[in-house]
Length: 149
Image (cartoon, rainbow, N blue to C red; front, side, top):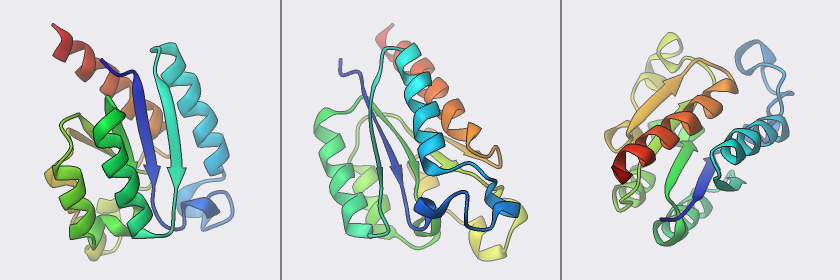
């Protein structure tokens, strides 16, 4: 079995630490990546960590992951609420997918309450800040271990 996890991040997440810290906190995407790599390494996973403001790049990485990954953590950001194309790409994946949101999308504007990605996600973590990524990796480790039994 592959020991590779893809961690994908959507638009504007490159501005974490600068963008609306009262909502998203002061952690940068580099901080989140370092924490993800630490947790993944503890479970003997390798990580491919990507961020893009372009929908097609996220879709290309999802297609790539289909061939090589054991699981995926995805924070589609604003594409969560708009992208049927990302949903379609994820629906072709045969591994567990964890959806992560730094803020609690259910406490925000009504349009943020709907997620296309949730339809194919094994789990959703929202409102835990950057720690949500770490929790998602822990959950993937559990799901993948259970699948090996």
